Image (tube, rainbow, N blue to C red; front, side, top):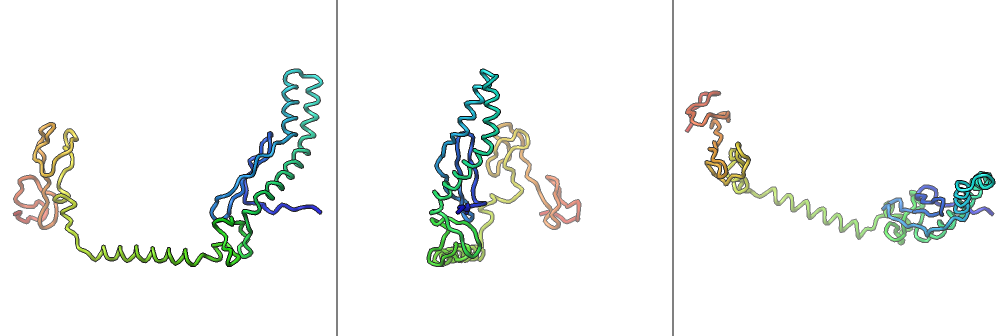
Length: 214
């Protein structure tokens, strides 16, 4: 009786002309297992004939062409056989969920008590712990929002202060009137106390609304 291959989508074929190898992965966590490398006698023989053909030509060239034609069928049969062996090698590490049909790893994604994957039957202990952590975080955020903070302690006097010299780009000390590197006078911006418009350095009245400045 023909043995059908169970894994049809959760693997990557890493086979080469030198041999066969596959990576099987869990469809839930994407971790997985790599099968052991299985050397391909057919592939190595064909490469040897191709090398001889390139060096000697003639008879060896015709033998190489014949070998390539034979390989296509022989290699495919060897490939399928090696895949069945690799699937059997890793099958103990995987189980197919009867509810969602996903192939999942037994180690991390299979709920043995429920006979389902953790997507279909989550671990109640893990879910409860995660829900508790989310609740604690949410409550902590709400508590922080209820508090009143002194914003000036974080802004050093407001948005009108410069952090760098407009001439040379050197860093400025808080409240500096001149740049310590190039001597440029640092002008602090002024804004109207009524409408917020920017004012000239010595303006007594706002040019926008006419309000007298203190």
